[in-house]
Structures are given as C-alpha cells and as structure tokens.
Image 1 (tube, rainbow, N blue to C red):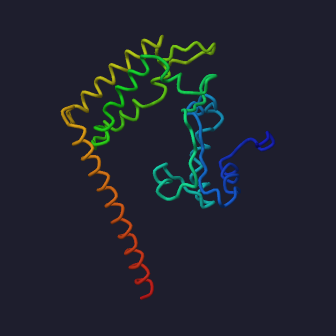
Image 2: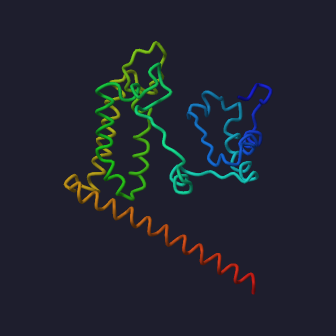
Image 3: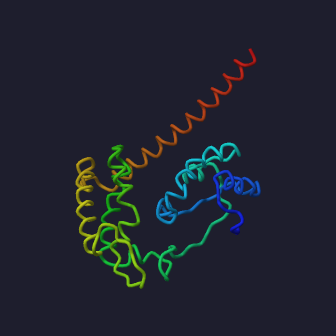
Length: 226
C-alpha cells in the first residue's frame, strides 16, 4: 500500500518502486482499464505524459517490457494456478455474466470465435486489426441485460438490442471477408495441418535467428580481438 504522502505520482517514482522489489520478482504485471486514460484520470492530470515517460525511466533502471508470449518463452513456470471458474472485476458475481450472461452475448461470442482458426491463418493486416477490435470486451458488455442498480455506459447505443444488432452486422461483414480468403469448405483436418505448419515454421525461424545472433556475437568478438 502506498499512502497519499507518496503522491503526486511521477513516472520515475513509480519505476523506482518496481526497481526496489526483490530480485527474484522477475515479472511485474500492471493491470489497468483503458478508461484510466482521460476518464478516471483526466487529461489535465498529465496521465498521458506519465505513460510516455515510463519507457525511458524503466530503461534507466534496466527494466524492460515484454508481451505475454515473450514472458512464457523466457521464463519457466513455477507452479499452476487452479482457476476452475473464470473471474472478473465486474458486478457482484465477479464472473463473466456481464459479457456472456444472455443469449445475444453468447451468440455473438460463439459466432466470432467460429472463424478464429481461419483468422490465425491469414496475414492480412486489416483482418488482424479488425479481429482485435471485435474481441474488445465492451462490445459484449454493451449487450448486457443485467439489472445491477448501477448506471452502465453503453457508448453510442440506446439499448443492449441496438448494440447486438450493430455488432452482428459488423461481424457478418467481417466473416464474409474471412470467407473470401479461407472458404468454409476448408476441412478442420486441413486447417489444423496448416496451423501446425505455420507453428513449425515459426519455431524454425526462431531457432535460426538464435543461431544467427550467436554467430554475429562471435564475429563481433573476433573483430574486436583483431
């Protein structure tokens, strides 16, 4: 816990807290809502400048940023976490009911992920970008019909049904674009074979890149010695 005497909070101070953690703490997770940028923290609070300054402050302390994929590649897991049911921050239930609690939400969710395998195959930048947009949790939260007693910001929509209708129209267009690249006639076995090939190629490229980096280091040492 950090008391009010530690504020105002600046980027260098925040990174200093992280740098002061025990060395065995190799991975630090920072979780936040996007609403922190400009809503929970107004722009006048300099929240954007705070985040802009973080990378440079972290670099000074020898701290780097990594994606989840890079983390699982670099570090071995130390244990398993048993989470039999999905958890969330939302509502009293703290589960996924605000996103998948009604028929509309589940229909939209299932239809979206019905094309996941084919989306992962493509290299189309716009398809990948729209795939990320369509997975945004607020798309499904806008469709909730739960009565929580709390005000819910539905963005541009007047009701959950408006949100559902608009999302399904957009999703239908997206799926048509995916079908044009990878028709639904592709059998699961063929699809799985393609995915396996791509995975193997990625691993081979990574292996060759490591070997290349190793030879570059040797060459640099040899050149320095001469």
